[in-house]
Image (tube, rainbow, N blue to C red):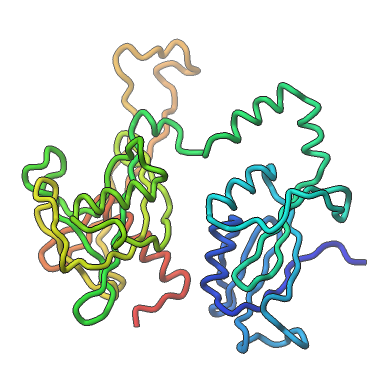
Length: 346
């Protein structure tokens, strides 16, 4: 009579902390439905969230944060799950251990979410056993799981970390800090941008890259730059991989920008940026092979139907300044993300 579980409900003390945990640590998608209700989507199921004391009706007779015990089946090998959990700084309370799932033996690890619910993440033993029997396949799996997936070709073109810096303004409200590149810069002189730059060998992560570059450009100590979140990655000019982050920067009154890189620093109120509507323009994207291109190796030769497209360019014009290019794209994505999740500039 019953086919499957569609969704369950967690009663939580802090919606934002819960969403951040399940999105960052377990890769679930935070969704909003029915006039602002929140849920965590994964596979073909979801977890609806109720804020303790403000539950939606009907509800359980005795809803209580921290009383759930859930088993989730991973879509990737358990070793990859363990690496992700560990990288996020979350303690594994137990495991890997053998358990029994709904359809057979499983191998599990256990963690606690912000409300101390017990979350079991498992894989069915058959999949792991099969790889163990196929030595060549297991060897390939070992090679691939030792690396973090990136963007193909990025190492040749360059990997960059940038920071969208949130700062507190004199009136106590949040603002976004921008740089105007020094007029002596070889590339993009006098253009408005966010701090950031190319990854270096000693950087532990792309966040470390963005944080280091921000510290060097603004003359702010690393300990004054705090992680807030990560935005969608994008491909920049020449196929460079751009990793944008949002951070909170303290002590900007004492910052000492590097004059070799930064010509000016200014702040625009976040609520004002959220209210701004950028102008949108497009340019054509076409493929133009070189003269010695081997047309004889592809179907259709010189008549091959190359795909064409357009590139969207955003322009924010505020106080006589123009914010465009990658900076405008990152800013627009950040503002859209806030507004889609119910953030209000009020």
